[in-house]
Length: 339
Ligand code: AMP
Ligand code: TRP
Image 1 (cartoon, protein in one colour):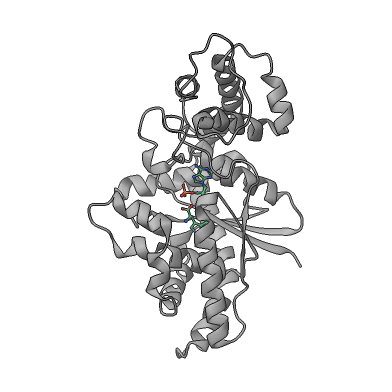
Image 2: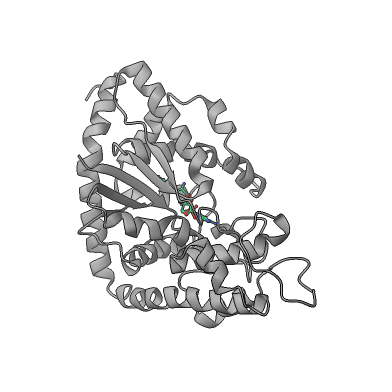
């Protein structure tokens, strides 16, 4: 039996290099693994948990579908679909709401972080992890590949699955979070003490988006924060480190390491004779651009065929429904709803 893999990403902004390294790039690898049955979802219902411009959101959804294809996700090998096209997610989330204690949601760190930034905190933002649990559980998912920031949400999905199984009998598979050993938390280039995030990606120099112009990428990396004490006479040592003072250097090295698929030793070797951080930044910019340029070129081609993208979205939604609808019926029946 193949292991079912499910993951999702919000169409709230163009995906950045953190999303790519922490999530999407790993999805492309999973797709080539014959032991996995992969489902990747554009979670537009999750995007609605903070205010969105309707026209922009719709465009971003199409753009993200095109980006899925541009990075190498293949609708013939994986199931690629838009969350709101399959009603199981919203319906399933309601059912799971009715077995999830609210105290579990109040403890979520992402809710606390995000709600500080909101003028009005919407109910959907608190409920976001339950919707995510529905995404995962109604597909009988074994593995959830995500970045570090989503680990707590996958653990919540596990707790919800166990609680349901306890009350209504063995139903849901209890899923495992799969966090990459490197690059699961790429930091902001402007501030290496906070994670690179879509909601800050409008800030100049914070993120590298996958569709950015090479000149902008180079500029952002050359201006990125390295360490506070870089004004020494001799060349600084360029090594991986957990030292908070060196978080910026560590972040650049991590991006370089993941994108070149080298070991930490090999990466440090590459920079053993560097004259300074400028050399490191140049090398990182080169590697990032060599990865993003072909993606950007493919994306601009793919996005021009809107009808084909819409056809692929429909196809994905049909495949997704065929998997999740039977589980939804089973759950409704077990909870006492008349079918
Ligand atoms: P989101 O941008 O919240 O839709 O996240 C989509 C995926 O990218 C999730 O698996 C996140 O865990 C992952 N992700 C988001 N930001 C980062 C980051 N800075 N570093 C690594 N992974 C990330
Ligand atoms: N909440 C996730 C994020 O913002 C996206 C997401 C929604 C997801 N549903 C999911 C990830 C299911 C994995 C599985 O990053």
